[in-house]
Image (cartoon, rainbow, N blue to C red; front, side):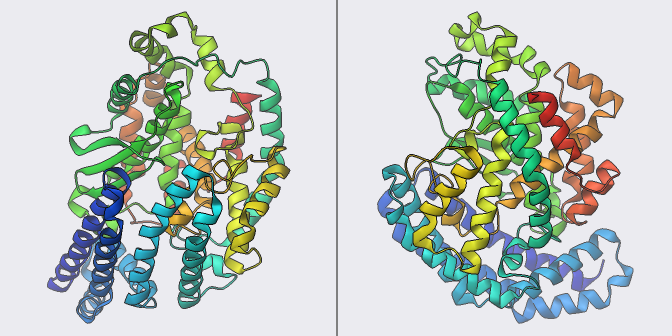
Length: 492
């Protein structure tokens, strides 16, 4: 290594200290901050994000990076990859002025608070002005970054490296007929399953006990993480050795919080599996949201909804919730595999989930290119939902206000959920070919699977592109067939 490279690393770590400090404040805003603290918190976050941007685009960083790049012939692959990713990040970052970064940070702080209130009251009008502002900022950033096809490309690039809107649209257009057919068949096949079979009284503190036991058994390290309660489940990393999960609870249905925890624990185990000594460097950072989502969907669905999993955990759940003792394993599985068209994405079953993403992807593109006005979102949402699901959301809370992403400025995000499903199925299929993993899955022993994911996915950080990562782990380019096969086998 050279002095210049070491200096770039030091500056990158300094940026990560600022950003992770902002993450602590953001997590606190979502969990424990009193309502009246919002104004000051928005100023704090704007200040920190502005400082991080200033440092990451400043003359010192640019000069050190240029010197290190000239000396890169002596570097191994990890160093070369870090330099490559820093250069890409810098080229995007320098196009965005500091004042716009601060403006977006403050707008998202107020936007998230407005979304929580609007969702609680099911009143889109309370959130619409905030969405208008955040959308305007997103469009400005897209124009500053530049794009080849459409403005959405510039936003998508921030979440899924190497992806284009046209490719995603082509993929989703090809998937739509098959996903629709599977969803309808699964819903029809599930009509005989009672929607209230598992309904009962599930005290929150007992749900928390089961959730923690299960998450810990899969490999989530509670000495380096915790679970809290929020309006919308999420996972965030506050620093090396500090990963926070959140969920929400329904005292009539313990599976709602449990599958939320399984999903977020998948994200969390990915974060805990990154190279901790490289925190703040590309080599210690997740490569994309499509890969990140693959981890959550793999653990939530391929593991957490499997028969071996519940052969192990249903008896323990019945100890904690005695009324489950009368429920057989087959009855339980039929209940958690039940497919039905529902309004809420995060509670949707596997068979219908991707239809939610197709809807949001289409709406986001139209918002960004201006063909859909903010004031018309509820109508467009409800019309699109009715086309895909055959029913109309009864209110805004179960319609266009159900997701937090837009309030966070997360335009360009939603396609990565379905990419995550495709990646998860392909990775899981590849892992099962390993005899040791296949045998252990049958015993509900997930240590070998986690070890394989650590080696093939987590430890890679951002050293290689998402497509290359999937190819290196599975031996194939990303293909939808494993996801479609999984859905057909489970539901049809």
